[in-house]
Image 1 (cartoon, helix red, strand yellow):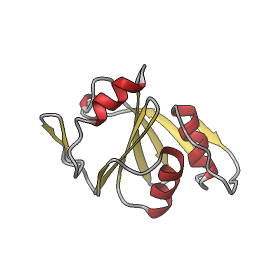
Image 2 (cartoon, rainbow, N blue to C red):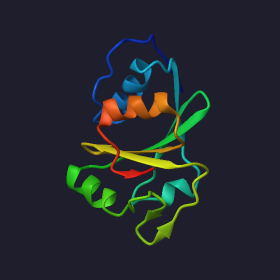
Image 3 (tube, helix red, strand yellow):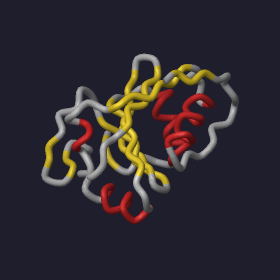
Image 4 (spheres, helix red, strand yellow):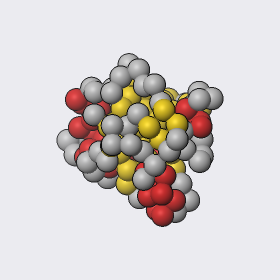
Length: 129
């Protein structure tokens, strides 16, 4: 599913997947696509993630039923972002973890424009590079 929008100057806060997509669009990413995650990515946390793709970059979003579940899962992430509970994750690039409300978002990479949009939408990263 492709979603197209025009760029605006302000990035709104995101509390869910729809809000994340709107925030990325407001951050200048006109084309944002949502896909199923790869089998290994689906096992990072207690629920499967959703891949959110902007041109050239892939994010993984996890939406929980409650904020306490989100906090519990976020607490499993090591400071450098390479460990989630007892699992070691071999990221392609430096991981960046963000969370707000019932949402955890992982960005595998350090593209400044994406990180800026995520920070504005979700607040400062809680783990990773």
